[in-house]
Amino acid sequence: MSERPVLLVVEDDLALQRQLRWAYDGYEVVSAATRAEAIDALRLHEPAVVTLDLGLPPDPDGTTEGFAVLADILALKPDTKVIVASGHDAPESALKAIAQGAWDFYRKPIDIDALGLIVARAFHVRSLEVENRRLAQRGGDGGFGGLIYASPEMAKAVRLVERVAPADVSVMLLGASGTGKELLARGLHEASPRRRGAFVAINCAAIPDTLLESELFGHEKGAFTGAIKTTEGKIELAHGGTLFLDEIGDVPLALQVKLLRFLQERVIERLGGRRPIAVDTRIVAATHRDLPGMITAGSFREDLYYRLAEIEVPIPPLSERPGDAALIARQLVRKHAAAMRLPVTGLTPDAIEAIERWPWPGNVRELENRVKRAVIMADGKLVTAADLDLSAAGDGEAELPLNLRAAREAIDRRVIAMALARAEGNIAGASRLLGISRPTLYDLLKSYGLHGSDAKGG
Ligand SMILES: Nc1ncnc2c1ncn2[C@@H]1O[C@H](COP(=O)(O)OP(=O)(O)OP(=O)(O)O)[C@@H](O)[C@H]1O
Image (cartoon, rainbow, N blue to C red; front, side, top):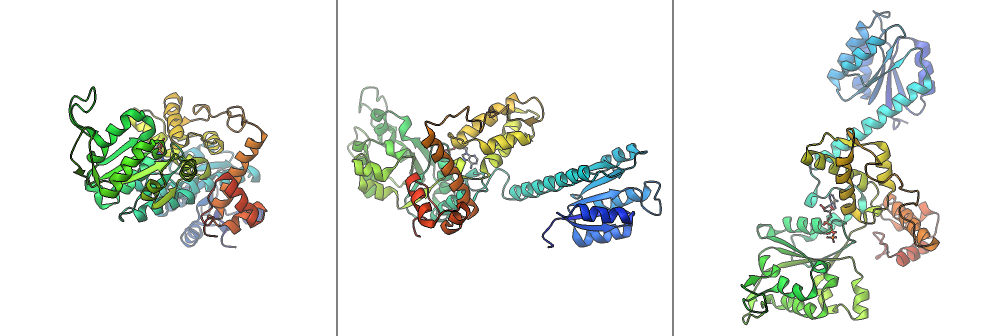
């Protein structure tokens, strides 16, 4: 039973003590009638929240003893949320208590429901503070590669990348646009012995096929019209370091052959060049495409795939990482407010709720764009759902799915992802939570292309 949060009630009226203990059965209510008892209880139970009647003996009609208790509590445990009682005749003492560090006040005679709300809010805020502190200790600007995350899904991807970073194996990051593939690739580079070399990134989908070859391999002066000087390609620029090839699935077949040769022989030839150049570059590739499907269709070389994908790291979309969107949003608000010198400090509860409901088709990139804009739009200190332009989230107004089947699939995916997250990727656990059999869940995972952590092995 000691798992219930402890609420310390400092109150000299024994009947009232009993009434409160009875009313707040969601908490472990500990009572104290004097300053000494209150401090003993504070030391013993370390309650997160205390309600404090300022009129305690030996000054039951005044407030001196109450203020002394308040000072003691805040000196011993400054993060305690103290809620003081203000007598109907002395509202100013409540304000004075708040000025001295009390969290809130309530009026006597006690309204159990109203006080209950204040107490619940105090516990809630306290738990958020504890969580924030825990995250801050992980490193101010995020952990590995600057990534911010708390979901087990993302932690798993990060752990895998961390583990393979020092080894000389090829890594393929699989995830949709904006899920953080480049940050992960950069983190991999930083965690590898190659961190003294350069990290070079190229998005193969963003460069026209005709230019991609010279971007990757470089060219000699005069190799083609406009080649006015010899230029090193990205592979050469990353010599001694890491080259991140984003959207590898968009590399045309002819160039795939050339890439494969580089990976086999570790030499390149610039366009128009005649001599092979030895290059020591580690390739990390990424794609959102179904490469095995492309291999079957003949548009991606199987031999290149096996060279590039010794280890595959699936990166879940933001919508399948419970809790991450709100966490990243908080950090981004602080970052952009500081960069733009705006007095915005956080998000309103309705903004957090809207963020949690939004499907984030553009993943973290979309989140970052919206937060940046919202920080500029915000009127006060807090960003609202309207500032984020997410007020229609969940109404179905912003994103009407293609048809009912697509809508059902979207909901299935979300709920399955949540169940997997709660069961820490365990299929048996997730299927129990969903009220379906294991084989049914496997079928759903397969048909939606989702991965439970033991989906492959189990
Ligand atoms: N977990 C995260 N924490 C903080 N910022 C993130 C996180 N994931 C992504 N970002 C930010 O979101 C943006 C998109 O991330 P990134 O470029 O790594 O995605 P990507 O998967 O490589 O996308 P694309 O394939 O479209 O280039 C970047 O500004 C990045 O800093």
